Image 1: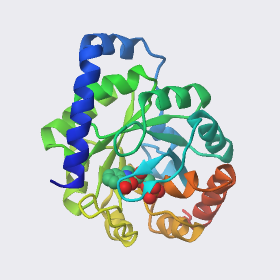
Image 2: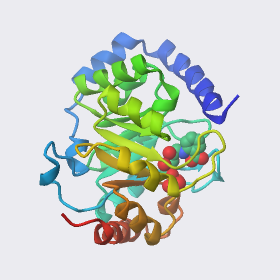
Image 3: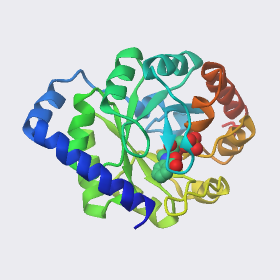
Image 4: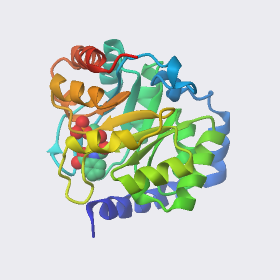
Length: 274
Ligand SMILES: O=C(O)c1ccccc1NCC(=O)[C@H](O)[C@H](O)COP(=O)(O)O
């Protein structure tokens, strides 16, 4: 069983327990009653007319306690405090890992972060059931993660449609040329290239530069994983990233606010000028 399959098996089991406690109809009602979602596409610099885009590199800052590849990363007793630091540093979106078994996250983390910041919040989980999309909205998320490798074409398209119907955006995550074609065909507007191979967990930042030219000009392009320094941020920006998604380098840093600001400055300086 691959790492992704193993994670998803646990996610399905935990989802079954939550569904038994709160049926879909109840979560749907909560989702529809939630305050409107914030526009993450716009917050990440997206514009239907690519000529209207600015050249600021945006940062999606992640609340990440542990991971399958690295084990324990940081305690994070108060995700709200960390998220507020990220926002003060200039982050455009906060990513909250809600998967419990392998990442140590929870919906409580999402609630705490939602209450602490004004910028859009991404519910970062392994979405395999529409229940999770309603649940994300019910907990105030503005954005959900859809991993192309985990979904067939029909499911990807229907999850994207549901996400948009609920007023949210999706970060549609790809790893290969074929997955990019599938993301585009499904209508993705925010497309991530995750340079972490979900089978081997190896991180190869060069993957981003190879795949970025395949992405459409009207999409927001997000480089995911493997940021350790401003040098890597500049490389991603120069290769066409509109935004970067960073977890480990921020949660392990003593000054997450300053690090977010440094990453924005380094990436913005390196982005090709129009
Ligand atoms: O981080 C992992 O080990 C991992 C393993 C299997 C599936 C997903 C995984 N990570 C999720 C992510 O996409 C990252 O948390 C995110 O891109 C930030 O990465 P990093 O800055 O390298 O912590």
